[in-house]
Length: 311
Image 1 (cartoon, rainbow, N blue to C red):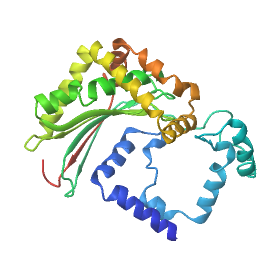
Image 2 (image 1 turned 90 degrees about the vertical axis):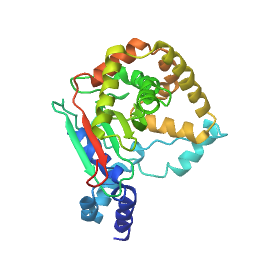
Image 3 (image 1 turned 180 degrees about the vertical axis):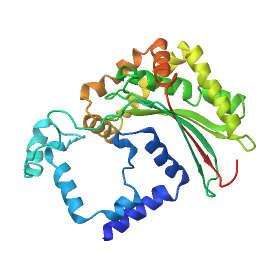
Image 4 (image 1 turned 120 degrees about the horizontal axis):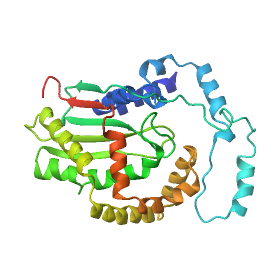
């Protein structure tokens, strides 16, 4: 009961007291019709209040088993030195079956989507309004039913960098030249086990209506679909992105975290190590094809975060 109160307080601090987090929960619930990503990791408040000790014990005994764990060790140590330490520590834990069906995880599939949705949240605590449009997108491991496949994942990473980055056309059009927004960009991640999200977002300048901001954003998206991305921007983005992958190796914790997350979501060490080569192979044609596969004619979730009773 004490821990239940701790979890409820954590949910209040991280989600319920932040209108933006509340809106993201509702966007995820609308975006994913069936996939587990529609559920918040911490759970809904009514679920937390309903948990009992039997639920917790059953969950722990099913999922917290050695066959479902990945150990990543980073530092000045060899495999020969590590093995007896691991055997002495983790080898004492009884071996239990992995909670899987055969060799694959038994997960619900996301069905093809037919309709776009709109969500609006008004809250007096909102100081900076936010507009966003979210599309289902493929990741490294999972494509979209009846839509874009995993072959587009690396190109979508490049799209985020060249079109939605701080020096990209989207930011320049809405923030610098158009002076309609105080921020604008694209977010995307390819590393999850299930289908990912491609998100266009912007926050309006004072005096700019959300309708005007939405119209400007839609015009830039249409321009992207029609004209595509600039080859020189891709060339420069490759240099920057590959340099970041080199700098990431300076941190033992970063490398361990990236490898552990990749292995947990079904990727291999080779997938991680081969990322710079995959980035280097991306062409403008591949980026344009990925953008059109995810955006053109596809359903989306548009969300507005607004001050209470105000535009």
